[in-house]
Amino acid sequence: MDKRKVIYYTDESTDEFSVAEIEPRVIDENYVYIHTSRFKKFTHFFWYRVVATPIAFLYDKLVFGHKAKGTHKLKKHRKDGYFLYGNHTQDIADPFIPNMICFPKTTYMIVHPNNVSMPVLGKITPSLGALPVPEGMKAYKNFLEAVETRISQGHVVVIYPEAHIWPYYTKIRNFPDTSFTYPAKQGVPVYCFTNTYHKRRFFRHPRIITYIDGPFYPDMEKPLKARRQELRDTVYRFMCKRAEKSTHVQIQYIKRENTQ
Image (cartoon, one colour):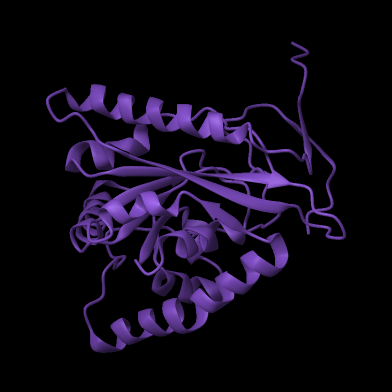
């Protein structure tokens, strides 16, 4: 459990407060996002369904008493691929919660290269659905093809647009519209989820209640930049409204004064 009570920040767009220290590998054009061999398909099933899904359920329930509200909204696209955006406030629970709320659909998550760079776990996270952001145009082409393929297969692609982890943060940080290019170009649905925090008696960890909103659709008659911005603004507005439901502050965030 994060024992910090107060965190001072300078820039909500770039400050990172995860306690993990990992040297990220370079994701170049040789990185394989989609494996087609039977062995790789088996390892994906084993790590994702046999191992990770039960652990995710137990961790979310036992540690955070997790509840989700609005999962019925996802049923509208239970056979379709869609993008799912959320607030980034946990290092372990954040990969688990989308798995739970979207079950039985498979989720793939756009992640920092750190997530595939750990000595042991980094070998497993690709089987859990990690799609690391690459470097260079050749590698980026492969990355985009992987994202489009997973959507076309009817899966869910999860994005944390805030990018950086702020543990237990109860507001929504401002984020750019960049990550909304994917659904804006493909013309596919968008959902968002907002994790809120609530005090529990006799428990050290607060309860997480997740609110789900959507679907939202890009207006394909508008230019790409306009529909990307429109999706971002809609998701941001819903997430900010849901974040107001938090009733407990585990860690207080205070902005440093500009001394210059």
